[in-house]
Image (tube, rainbow, N blue to C red; front, side):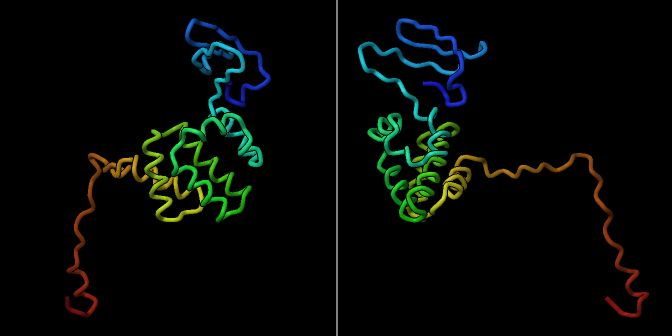
Length: 168
């Protein structure tokens, strides 16, 4: 399999003894382990997520998802059911696919930990899971740095207020 953006494009395939490399315009887009025998499939579910998000009705029948579902943690199945119960089948599936897309960027253990917290909090959208994930993975340092050499304003001279007729 290749990412959906490369579907129907001419690619170059280099077949080695143990791996298959697929290139597009001299850029390596994917490497799969080589499988021997008939009716063997090497499908990366992340390649199909964009397409499935557009067509959530295909989620349960898509071969890459069915293969992945056999091995994924129970928390993912619970989150899928929770999203579908809260938002309906189509919207819930779309939200869940958005969570699955996090596997492209984040460590699976971090995602699964964030999903566990999301289930406890009973969140019903992928943005909440993303926020939990970002809070756990990003450093809590302020992104702002003080400007070195920046002059501070002088302290205020409050003695001038006595001229107004009051006392301080």
